[in-house]
Length: 260
Length: 260
Image (cartoon, rainbow over all chains, first blue to last red; front, side, top):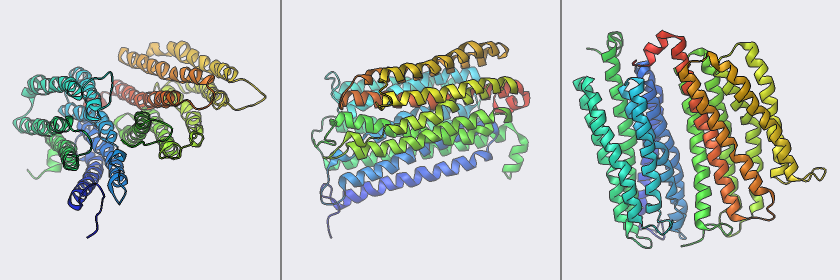
């Protein structure tokens, strides 16, 4: 069997190749489903479903680009890992992570003032978290600041987001039904479990110098699986919360959409 | 580390590359979102939202072209900055800047005569502003007129647009609610802050002779960030004004779309 790549062995190459393709498929078809399925929830919840579909659509674009960038950098006899553009992931997160928080708040359909106050804190914190993480992960030399310091700085807005989502948002959940509360617990669990992958991968990658094939493969696979869960699974849970709440708000909707 | 470009260093190349890709993603998915989200505002405001989506869609096309043009001109061992086509930006602005003013006026849903009178002055002024700026920025030799003179000529319609938006439009705002007036203030601030980037970049670029990598990178990054704010953020504020005004006009709409 011939070698697919001069840098990765065949198993490594195929694993990353197929995981990136899985990313494309998951993101594209979750988007299409969510955009069409928006009409299966009450108007009040459609913004949340449309934003969920927008998040996976933005990620779909970046997975297409990463797939091409990976092939360009690694396939064939003359590969060069530097051609793989890690920027795509950060540009993607810079756009999608704030939007993931917007969809989470939007699906609760809080009073407008409460919603605005929450988003005014969550969205800038999310953007700061991603922007501060990038120089550390890409090992850019900005004022000679070490990657670990960027990682630490990026953790502060992350902790603030967790505080807002688990403590502050927790208070507004008292008015939600038991079924919705359970779904929102799952939602926050998915968020915590998947967002946790990013700093772990960051730490593993922090002290490496030069190109480490096994580390590269682990990072790409970890990021991709985390992305699929944090965007597709997350968006589908948002959709399911929107369905439950639509039925709770409106007996006519419930009768039309469900058997019981 | 290998060099990605023979003209720019790796950080410069990656910065412009990723900013142009950010431009593509922002424009494409703001368009899709706005086109679908038009149904979340009352019919009276849908034109404004659809024009906003058209503006970002036109820009999306030009960002795809600029991204390819940039790679063609700068990537690899044999680059040539002259292959990068600055015309894309001016063609884009020639189409989108008049439309940005149309969406701004349309979302106010003024009386038809007032709207027509305002657009009859704003649209030609915007087209003149872009058309007069281009020969200066591209350093075309037309009748031997200096770049600074083109810059100055282009400033006159710009000032006229500001006069119409801030003084004349200001009068018609008295009939709008406090919430809408606040949003329109933000809108005009975004317009002023982002449109201000273009002449600054123009002036920096005015006296340069030959290719200056740092200046090129600063100009492309500045133009791209200004474009994203002036089109995507601007369009989303227009959408949000349309939502607020729809709810103010129609209690039934407000009850269906919002909790409070």
